[in-house]
Length: 274
Image (cartoon, rainbow, N blue to C red):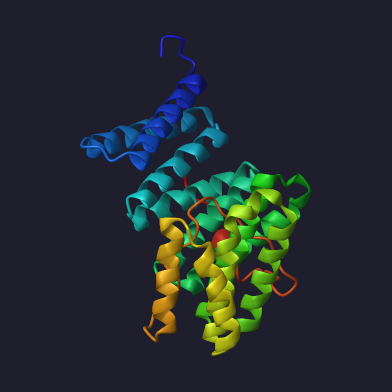
């Protein structure tokens, strides 16, 4: 503040907001409500300063931080608002990889709300964006790509497009086998494959993958997903999977999934007022 350097001040507000966010998600604390207020305040201060100096990169981080916070607190309307702002800014500042990540996050919120049709266009935007920057991929991006294909398969399962679901899982499996750091994610494409086969009423094939998924399920999230699929198999209706791996996820395209302008119109039109 004394230096009157608004960029450095904005950067430190963002850093403090991120610290408070990590306290909130990593700890059960009695002062959580106070931490949330502080987190919001710092991200908003960062965003305001970023406007004043036209720093889109820092503005993007502030919007995305607020989107992450509200997602964690299950305030989906607010999360979608800030993620869409972040998406618009990331496109304006040509941070395409970040745009793909944010687009996936928006899609994931819609999926978890049982709205696969709304999720689809966001996944497709992320898919094509990542395909266009494929040469810049890192192992981190490959993880995101794998998880994204799994989410695309969920959309197709919900829409009873089983051939497309299998194709998306094929792509996830292909990436899994080519990237060493993905070994801990094996469960996710296995359980999704089981889900497709049972949705097709192919019991033998489904049981084969279900048995593998049972052996692989270790984390609480994996076990929750397994129980949900078992309920679906038992005939209890469920719109779409309520769980996906909650890390950052982005999509890459298959030959079948070619985005046209109508499919991503609502995203391309996101020239929000900053």
